[in-house]
Every structure is written in C-alpha cells, then in structure tokens.
Length: 193
Image 1 (cartoon, rainbow, N blue to C red):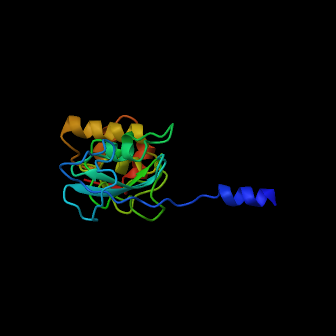
Image 2 (image 1 turned 60 degrees about the vertical axis):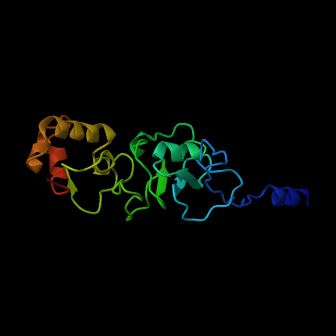
C-alpha cells in the first residue's frame, strides 16, 4: 500500500505554461526575453515562439525576442544536457517563429529534419537524404547524412568547396582528402552539382 501511495505521488505531472508579454516598462527576462507574469497573445510582435525537443534540460516552448539565435533558444530551455554536442545546430543561426529545434537527436526515419536547415540525418551518416545532395549548396548536416560521411569528412568537403570555388562536377569529389574510389562509388549517385 505504501508503495502505491509513493508511486502515485512520484508520478510525472504537467506544469501549465505561464503566458507572458513584452512591455517597454516591465523588466524582461535575460534568458527568454519575456516579461515574467505578464499575459501574451500567441502572435506578439517582436517575439517568436520556438519548440525545443531532445536533450535539453527543459524541453518545450520558449519565447524569445525577434532576432534570437539558436544558442539563445537552447539557453532558454536550460541548456543542453552534459555531453551533447550542439555545434552542428549552428548556434548563430536566427530562429523563426514556430520552429522546432531538435537537440542531440535526429528526425524520425523518413522525415526531413525540422527547421530551415532541413536534411539532417542520423549521426555518422547512417541514413541517406531523400534526394541528391548538391555539393555546392549542402550544409554540414546534409553532407554528414550521406552514408559513409561523418562530420569530419563533411567538413573536408566544405573546406574543399570553399578553397576551389565550388565543385564543377561530381567527379571533383575524388579530390577531397578521405574520399577514395570505394567511397566515391558509394556517393556518386547521391550527390549532384
């Protein structure tokens, strides 16, 4: 009986989200950009609402001032959990209203990663993206999603692109350090220029 009471009291419970609003006279929270305790409509000018999921201390909705960055959103969610690498999220990118930011997790198989930089796959490149990846416009996350390409090789591809003014043909991929004949054969049908 005591165990049942303890289990009932220890169960997770949902906490209501307190609505907040920006006002020029009220103090603004440094982490969320919101005025504590003030009501706010969903479409307040000058603010965005983004959802954070995955390996953050407090996943859920956060309100930020317009122009906030991914790093601000992660900080507003209490920060990433220990050991989570957030570098691939581009912490300097501006967030958009209604965006979902996945921290330390990938999109479910068959779905594009949410947000403006869609195309991220599983870490280590175990899942191929839906269509051919353009070598001249691909992000680090898109290249990392290619089979056999990890973050180090993806960065080498970006560095080669920057040094040489882009790729003129898919076969130029062979000039990237770390891409031999076998890896090129694996990638040539998955990329384009």
